[in-house]
Length: 135
Length: 354
Image 1 (cartoon, each protein chain N blue to C red):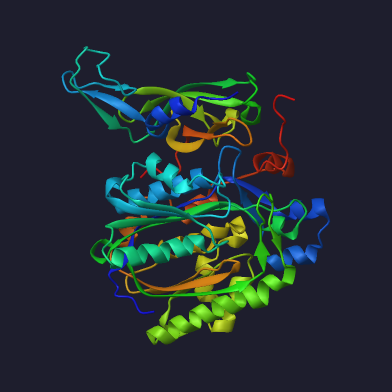
Image 2 (cartoon, rainbow over the protein chains, first blue to last red):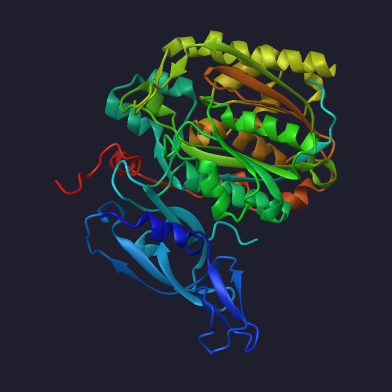
């Protein structure tokens, strides 16, 4: 399956970093980066980079196969509460499905998402792994 | 060459994939003599997962280096990515890592290739850039998912890992460079032709005229230039293609094994190519004390060697505590079978759309 190179390029900041919207009026943070606070509607917001660290709130294990994901299966998809108090979903790697626990500390790391074909573009983005060291 | 001691290490980071395969399992599968296996002195090797490559590993190591240095990524003016397993033949890895870490767009940025010593060359260039005040900080990364033809003796050692060093001004550094020498020749000990998936090598030829000759020469020139002798160094780290060569070359140069073993990581993770000596150096930094003098020696086939003399300053323990240590990464592991390793390293691939 071929992805859009131009769309990926325009959005690469959001693939490479966990970007949050911080509202200057109500003070709340939200995922993802946008121009308006989803809680109070204020457009007085700033885009901030999350530490990428948090804890697993819940998770599911997916065996659903597509033409491009067989080599990664099974996928562990986790709901993560970031240290900034914001909830995000993401793929959890470096852990067997049976070892995942609610409350597990995780951090976002750069990994391969997919590739168009053996000669195509490689798409990188963030996934979660169990935190290597809490610093 | 004596340096002005005005450039040093501000931060460093390492990444070792958590998967390990026992070398004994590979050897049994391909019918290697057990005597050969034990002579290599490598118990197990690290295996990059299927969604990892030199870019993702280099990204992690560089992120930790920046975190340790507590530096604003926007102030980094150069990034050098040393690898012989870049994901793209044409398209820089350094720019992917740079953008993903939020490093300034006004930067020098290059992928360097010189077999296993490109990471060391990045270090040497970075020191020069800082000394000349061309940039405020420079990032030197060595990262490889080392390739080996299945069944080749190289498969017993070729592994995956990354190391990154953030070089900056002396006043911010926890260790400074007092000297560096590079010694290179045209020596055909190891190569990978264009479009070839796996490297070829000259078997025993990789030792005497390549590894040993270049390292001995770079170290001897460095010692002469600086007026130092072996006893002036607390630690010595040599490039680590296997577990025995670093001890042998250390002995040749007069360094007892007690000075070499603290930085010898290959027996636990295999040969991470461009990260090999650099991971060993990071491990030594994490146990060094102010005033210690360290000898760091890289080697790359083709062939060349860089020898650095580095003096540790106050504050190294505090900076070390800001990130995962090499020992913590060595302990983070899970063993996999040859079939799992083969899938992770794409030795077997599923054809899509056929």
